[in-house]
Image: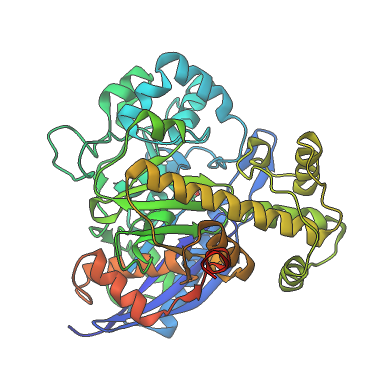
Length: 490
Ligand code: LFR
């Protein structure tokens, strides 16, 4: 097979990027052609994504990708999960809400009054996060927000619609709505138990209009060709397809984790730290529900069995707080200072709900420490050290829990995404677990996006194992040996 190029639009909660991927049987190159901030906007009715600006930047990025490489074969879009736009015909009804908006709390209460959380877990297999789409939609229904809507499009599905005029719901991301039925086997289409399909019973019991949920499609299928107006805007001289990728960013990231055995755990670490395993079957036990582990849909029907840890959000939101006075902080210097801290720092519960909403993170961390009789960090370096130690601690416990709940031994942990560049975090995670950490690639999400498109275009072939082999060969991970285990052995 000949090599070729595709473009990946990858929207994260703090920044978006457009990447050009060049893929062949034994080659994989990625180049960033555009990167832009993702700054949410608070208005009188709550916290929103600036989705028009994200789309404008994505389209501008595609235009520069095409100037660099006119032969691009396709485009794929991924983003964070759960959030959506409500539509009437082709019109978007209002700006999508940010999952950190507080309104979904009302939705949780009404939903759990209708359906017991244990019953919900049996139906959808999802960990409880107050922002899961079903709670947001419940809140929306209470406030009349669903009136007049004839469809609901998750963020990547919305961009795919704007690019092609075709409405569809890609399955990996749809699995985060809480409205897809989980099954005993992987979420394959065509299953007679309704696994991987919109759960009509659940939707009806929640009083949601079934008609707003679009046709489901699998990653790897073609959504459609670029609309002529879009093609003209970006200067495409030949027809260009939009391919559905693992449109949940975490699903794309997991595709590109260079796991070489089934005893590998992964941590996809960006704004969030998504910690878990890839499985063939969901784990729906009471213990798994109590530990708040989720069974999200993966590319090729695998299960992403994982837990959401608060992630680098704790750090980025702290930096944002410190920069409010107009100062610009160097992250490199801050991390170096944190690495040099020798006084013992507090290990706090990174998953405490108080850290969820945007705001003054250092004060919240200090409050947490005082309340729990822990040493309150005294300097920025100590705050950062405390955050990183606490994340490593949470990562360590989540890996251990994933292993216990699934009965799968873990002898290596891969960290991908921005967090894989944080040496202290990688080392401390290895130390906590007593197993090696393999760090990288940083741009796992974009790579996963690119690889699924490349496979659809016939530039590569095979299952995830062979795609991961290509990642492992082209992006050699950095290895962190556990210091604790080494000391014990010595
Ligand atoms: C990571 C992520 C997580 C999801 C959270 C909210 O970017 O997609 O997987 O739980 O954002 O959508």
